[in-house]
Every structure is written in structure tokens, then in C-alpha cells.
Length: 416
Ligand code: SAJ
Image (cartoon, rainbow, N blue to C red):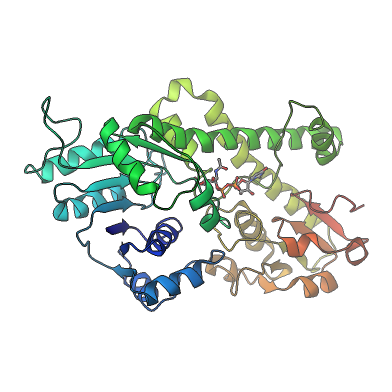
């Protein structure tokens, strides 16, 4: 049994490794030579709990190899990025490129599964593209009555949480959308090999919209919390306390405000729904704007705080990652705040990020410095908390008493 995984990023590599562990022969395909080399030497290019050990094991056993070119296989999993353009339109170029590469090696009986977060209708576009490139194969949904399609095509979104990817890949329920019910059943048989959660089948379009809906749901709920934090600021009330108290209501469950929403999913996917139906998505669009606006609000407050410090005094920025306890800085609001402060105050900004060994070049260029939490506590009388890393949470009040703190994560509720 052989599987080819297209894209060896945060989703593709863990997925390839987990499938390889079941004994399948897995080829991971990536366009970046350095990534292919790293994996073939048994190492990983991304940080994820337990991923290094798993990859080195399956590579050593010969179950996983990386390649720049697509090999024939029984099942193809496409896990490439789907960015959006400056105009908030989804860009499915990488998906179509991957489909084109897969089309060349497809044979009767193969299954193609798209996992990338995609606008509704993308799986059908993949089918149409393959149909065009391989007129010799019968495609699902395009076959004549009574004729069986040669290829199965399905959409099955990943839903794993960075930091828990290897656990959630196995334990989470999966939504499997087939171009036809038969496609869904074929894809289901594949996921059953390594998924312990329930595998639920539906249509490709419903599965595509389900994925976008999950992340839009979270974005809207975080926007509610962020909006509350602004109102509470205006009213001089502690938003964290209000949320804690409101959440004692049996049907209220408010999420946490923060410096904005980051990562490559929740800050992006809601736009795919807005782009599909702009007239009917005022709430989803506004939630995006509220969450992005929260970052601007934090930048303004932090700037005022630094300006209120004695001239030349250093100010610490705690965290650059897009959320707690990970090394992922994609679309990170913390990074945006730190960047804005560094551009304005240069060397006065002392950044603490235990998950970084160097500062991103744009921040380093301002003269801002990377330091550690112990030094920052000794040298900085003012601090901006941007990420709720455990190492920051564990700082006792004694070590930060008397400091000026802008706490965007509600990390230190006892700070005076
Ligand atoms: N955040 C808040 N307040 C909260 C929760 C989160 O400000 O109460 C912020 C985080 O700090 C971060 C951003 O939101 O900047 C997103 O973090 P997250 O932990 O909510 O989600 P991601 O981006 O790590 O992963 C999400 C997950 N989706 C949902 O929970 C619905 C994950 O299951 C998906 O697989 C992933 O997106 C994805 O790949 O789509």
C-alpha cells in the first residue's frame, strides 16, 4: 500500500509520518530541496511535539522518503498552502499545481484526497483539471450511468491544533466529503487506517464549507471577546474578571481576548466565506475586522506606554509567537506589535521569545534586542505581555511588583 503526500509543511509532514507508521510506503513531495534533504536525513524542519522522533523512525525503517517529484501511489493526499491575496481572495494555485503533478502518475483505482483548507468548489475544480489532463480516465460525477469512475476524489479537511498535531491527527473526528458517495467511502477506508476518531461522510462541497465554518466560528467568538475588552477598557472594568463571571452562566462560554488573531488558519479562512458571498457575510467580515483592529489598538496602547516611560528606559515585549508554547510566528499579532514598537523605539525594545534563537530580520534591523525573561525582569521596568507562554505565566508577583505592565493576554491577574 503506497501513499504520496503533496506538501511537507505543518500538516503534510505529520500526516505523512503517521501514515508511514502504519507500515504504508509513503513518499512526501515538496517543492523545496532543503526540506526534502532534511527529511531524508531523518530530521524535521518544523517544531512539533514528538514529530522529530516519529520522522527519524519512519525514515530509518524506509517507510517515509521525501522527494521533489511525484511518485505513483494508491492514495494521494494534497496538503499544500492556500493563501489569500491582498484583496482577500483565496489563491488555490498551489492546490491546482499539486493536482497537475498528481494527474501525470494517476492510474485506475487511485484515490486523490484534498486536505488543504479550500474555498467551496475547489475539489470539483481539482476533478475537472485532472479530467482535462487525463482524458483516458473516467472521473467521478462525470461518468455515464452504470459506468464506474476510474478515480476517487474526496475532500477531507485537517483540523489539528498546532502543538497537538500528532495526537489530534489520530483522535479527532474527520469529515470526509466525496465527489460521489463512492469516493467518500474509498477515502473513508484510507482514514480508518490511522484515525481513531469517528469518520463521517458527506459531499465534497459540504466538507469544504464545514472546514471554513469551524474557523469562522472561532474567529467570531474571539472577536466578541476582543470587542468586550475594548468596552471594558472604556468603562475601566477588568475584562478578564467580567468574562470569568459571565462564564459561570450555564449557557455562556466566552473565549479570551488577546492582541488579535494569528496563525495561518483562523485569520485567513473566514475570508474564504466572505469572498464566496460578500452580501451575506457582514458578521464574519466584521469579526475579522474587529480582530485585526484589536492589534492596532494594542499597538496604540503599547506605544503610549513606552512614551510614558523615562527617556531611554528599555521596555520588554514578551512573546512573538501567534499563540502560547509554539514556535510558529505566522500572521502573529504579537510579532506585528513588537515590529511596530521596534520601528518606533529601536534598541529600547527588548524582546523575550524563548522559541526564537534570533529576531526576525525586519525587527533586528531596528536595533531592538532579543533577551531572556530573567534579564528582562532585571532590566525592564515596563513590560508588554503579548503571548501567554507558560514560562511567562510562571513569573511570580514578587518578580514583577511595581512594574508597569500592559497585559494583552490576562496572564498576570494579580498585577497591580
Ligand atoms: N486566540 C485568542 N483567544 C482565544 C483563542 C485563541 O485570542 O480565546 C488566538 C490565538 O492566540 C491565536 C489565534 O487566536 O492567535 C488562533 O489560535 P487557535 O488556538 O484558536 O487556533 P489555531 O490557529 O492554532 O488552529 C485552528 C483550530 N481551529 C479551531 O479551533 C476551530 C484547529 O483545530 C485547526 O485545525 C486550525 O485552526 C487549522 O489548521 O485550520
